[in-house]
Image (spheres, rainbow, N blue to C red):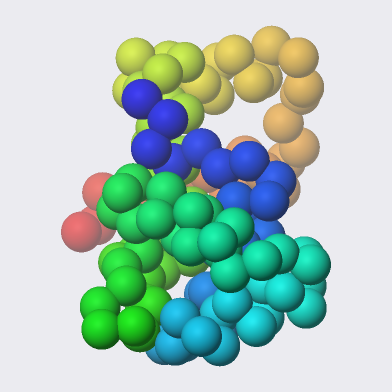
Length: 120
């Protein structure tokens, strides 16, 4: 499933919405014309695509996000883990550390996250 994978232009477009929301569809088309030299129809097509993926919505000509940029990043991470490591964070860490040795600081940061998770 590629719900949370964005191409380069999709990501730039999404960033414009997150930075500007709530934004009228008209204002969004103007922002995209300025930033990307897009026509109104190109903006509409891109918006429709990302709305169908559940990232944004266009209600009454006002475009807003259904998930924040941070929530989207979390969903991307979860999707990556599911697709590549059967949803296992430990398996992903093992794969990562086979090629790159963790620094003492990184180990401490991971341990702190684990400890905070255990506490509640």
